[in-house]
Amino acid sequence: MVKRLLSANASDVQAYTKDDLFKAIQSSEGRIVMSENVVMHEPSEEGITTSEMTKASGADMILLNAFDVFNPIVLGMPNQEAINTAIPNDNVIKELKKFIGRPIGLNLEPIDLDAPMLEDRLTIPKGRQASAETLRKAGELGFDFVVLTANPGVGTSNKAITDNIKIAKTEFNGLVIAGKMHKAGSSEPIFTDETIDNYLDAGADIILLPAVGTVWGIGATEIKRIIDKIHAKGKLALSAIGTSQESAQPDVIRQLAIRNKELGFDIQHIGDAQRNRYEAISELKIAIAGYRHFIAAVSRSVER
View 1 (spheres, rainbow, N blue to C red):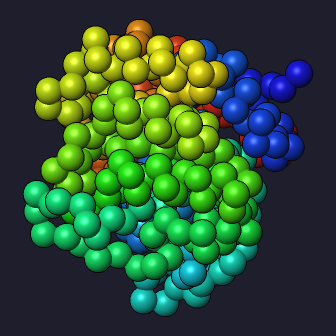
View 2: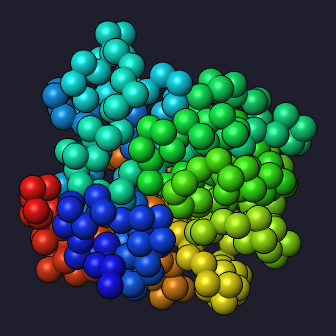
């Protein structure tokens, strides 16, 4: 039997296969927190990564944002203390996994140059864009999962996400998570029933949806129906706080945590770690897992 991620040691995580990680999340019954870290933002303290800080704040999974697979830098890692002196290192993710003992993934952004935009489009490096080449490289670097989504202003579409899920299933050997946290500058709906069906049919392992209470006009009834559809297909659902509410008052974080656990989300994501107090991660973790599991998670040595 696979040990659930909620209670897993670093040695358990290291031994997980892709299917093991899926089962470890599923068996944790909605008590898993994913922290998103922007790797090009300098950490709060010199000589330590934001990933280490968020793990120490209760995060069970770490998602790297703005990571360029062709220029692998995580600020705070050895020889990568500052952006102007950082030396790219193809082993940086494998080394970071030893430091934190948690599954690590990255955002890759499916760009759609034909997507109708609500704002000026931002251009990002090729190493951050979803493609067969970047997905293949992500596997070589040692990532456990990828999230096919987009940052504000980048411009993606549900079709571009669907197309890249199919590519990921052949080019990447980890879990594939897909969906939008917000509109990412595009004017199309964040999701529809058809969108979710397309993601599932394309082979996504976990579907990302905006956390209830984070996106204007998307309510609990609609989200619950979609989560039930996802679970009926044997897949998992991830809620995302990606609308700067990561820095809201602690009682708002707790409210979001419980509301979204009630709906059946298997993982709860919280973004922008560097721009917010790390207590937001702790508040989220304690709300959905309780203090006992929180203190065990932050105390567990990576040597175990």
